[in-house]
Image (cartoon, rainbow, N blue to C red; front, side, top):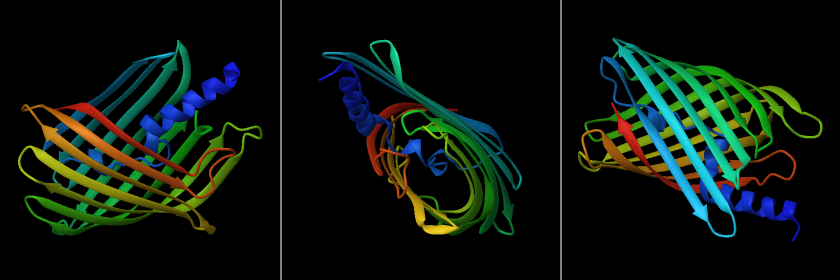
Length: 254
């Protein structure tokens, strides 16, 4: 097998094992925290080093900041991922996401507005810019269980790093359902599913789901286990439609 083919095999293998769904849809709900006045947030760090016929190093870092005051809430997310195989960068991806919430009435309905920038070299995504908003409904909420649904609308600008530098500007739906359940004070289960159809052509859509488990072991630190699944009905050339991953990491909350 030639060197280029071997490199491609390693990239695809590590991609399926580690990078997963965040290459397409960004799960903001997993980062949303129970609002309390003032500033709060958390930092996540995932590291992996493999040495066999090649040395492979992968790191994913993410930061979440949340500020709440009265009916207002602002979220800022930043994630960067990098994979190096014997000193060569093979995967480079990241996103920056800003979201604003305004609680209406008794909090049953929340008005949301968001913007996002995203890139991912392995998915041939040079740039994706999003701008959108809409209502978020509280279906059920108590001390342990929360269920929410949000039928949002967004504008998407996308530039691919393919042979034609393909560009697309379109309006899409952004429907998501999210569930959080606290098994006890240390263990939290969460699940979110996103569905994003193209309004001009409903046969073109993206679906993403994320299921997570967080286990607290000190006041500020916890272990995280996350399973992602992402499907793109019309991906760029030679890119698989389905991606999945299982990740574990450490979280620091403040």
